[in-house]
Length: 79
Picture (cartoon, rainbow, N blue to C red):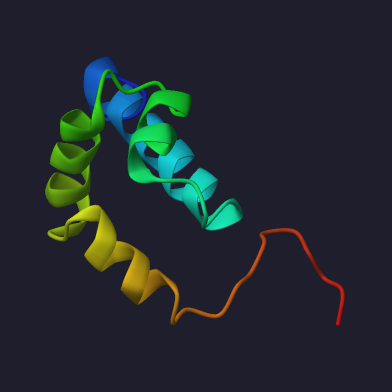
């Protein structure tokens, strides 16, 4: 809490959410239940709760918007 300004529990939720978003982006054919379980969520509902909390969207709405974004990777400087 002192170093990051957030609780360890919230930090863990953010890391798990990021893992799920990246997994779905890397494997768009995976269903959301598989993404949830492989990302460390107990079930789809817990994943959906975090999506709503962090993005104000459900997972499918997020995927539609994310699909419009230009792909990028930090540290990738290739043309």
